[in-house]
Image 1 (cartoon, rainbow, N blue to C red):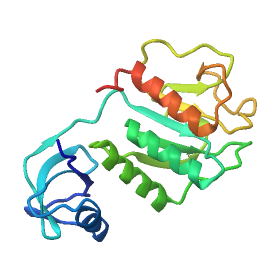
Image 2: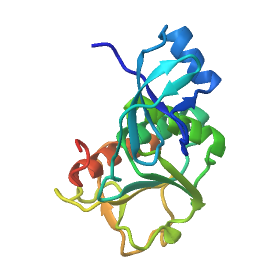
Image 3: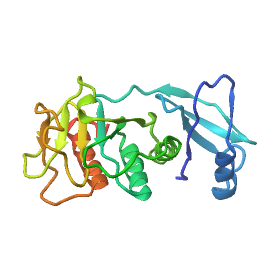
Image 4: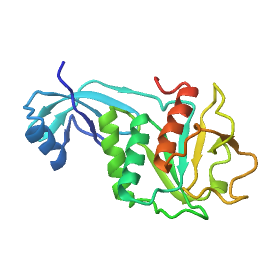
Length: 222
């Protein structure tokens, strides 16, 4: 079965055809060598997903359906790694997994900076297309741990603590900087969880922890 490209096309869609960007057009025509009538799938990144066809420089809309945002919500709050390629890896992999949101953390020992918003959004959009998702990753911050939403359970990755429960109801996975959090920086009410015995890089801990949290929230295969 031939691969059907999946495109992120921001709404609103007011006509029966959606004009494609030059980047999309070049990739479809020159790289994938698709011709008119080729099947495409598409999403607005806000829950709508559709099946269409390629015609000239446009996508002809076909059948469309609505996918509700997955529940329970799962997000990651993370102190940014120090280098661009590590930042990109973190955004792309969390977006591919289907995490709802990334919060960039400001911490006392953190040395990295969040990526430029346009770059982070571009990475998230590419990951949405790669993973054939319907919901675009949200990006917020910088913020502190204490300013994260109070309505969400905090799961702070910390070595030599207990592993997460076998069943959880989503929440925010909190990943600190390489030097760790300073005492008092994380609320005492937060849940401490271990991600194994090894010392992980920030981006590795974020991806591993997010996978565990998604799985134990019943979302990894949903």
